[in-house]
Length: 349
Length: 103
Image (tube, rainbow over all chains, first blue to last red):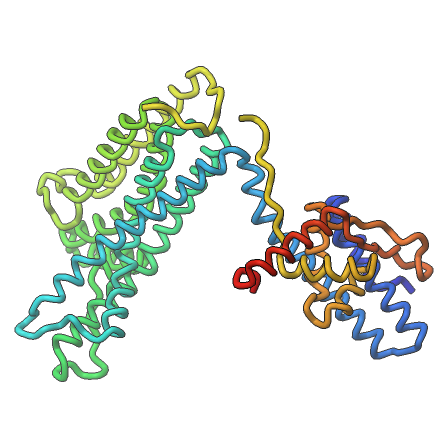
């Protein structure tokens, strides 16, 4: 009969490093085997069983704690001296995204604080106010991430010569931001918008609205799949003009989701190409502002009727493709520059 | 500047308990520490803490000279290093002088 923990020890030796085995795994197994042996000699069967179970639990606890510790320290070790640059980008991105989100939450709340239909909707009690804010945050967060993340990258990398590992980390950050935006815009936002509308509707309508009454969902309250299904239904019914409006809304969701990635990569390559921090900041902010302004103008709200002359797909795709090409161009140009001697150090200007 | 900045010594509450026990007993096994701590140390976390303390240089370990039981792995015995003793003394003094920070 093999001693308890022998198989676990063999399994761990195939995965873990020698140091981990010596420091962590072997002592756990050795103590388990010693205690188990003592109990066995005293013929205490139940204690043997209990010690075996406790030892196995301890083994897995050690594995989890060790993995958690390694996972937390590995990125920091991998980044080395670039960790400060990436930390700065992360901090500025979170700050910028939070600020933009707050800016987009405030106007609807302020608008509600005025008299609506002769009745004061807000200020309501604290719980109502929190519920309204929570339902507004998803729609603001999507835009907050789309605009705030690239601004954060631009401000965080401004005047810094980021090494290749820092660039990889920032690219990972903007990709994660894009995925988070996609989830927010396509899952949280429709639910939040609908909750907000229904809450305000009930507050204004009061007793006149029955308990079971529901409010129909508009384009901004539909998920991507629901939006797609409605567009197909409209096309089948011959309402092509109405379906075009929904189609623009559909593509706009993708534009907002892709914005952190497209603008973030552009900001990163711009900072690696333009030496002066002020110039890179000015160019970057101008491009982000221009990008946002363009999509506001050609948004489904028809601010610019000329946008109808392009297909919704072209409206969504062309500015993004142009920006991606510009980012690639910047990247190629920065590769031809002489290598930086002190990666991660501040630059003048 | 190319040289790495030296890290300040830190001592968590669990590390402090371990150092106190090791200095009092002049060497113990992992499970002995758990048993002697009266529930303040847990079986699942003591080995990770011991490994971290070895990295910091507060303790050292060696395998016991002979396996206690045939077929079992040799146990690892831990003892405090002079640095570990000094760090414990320094933190104990700090706790005495600034009790509000030692809670």
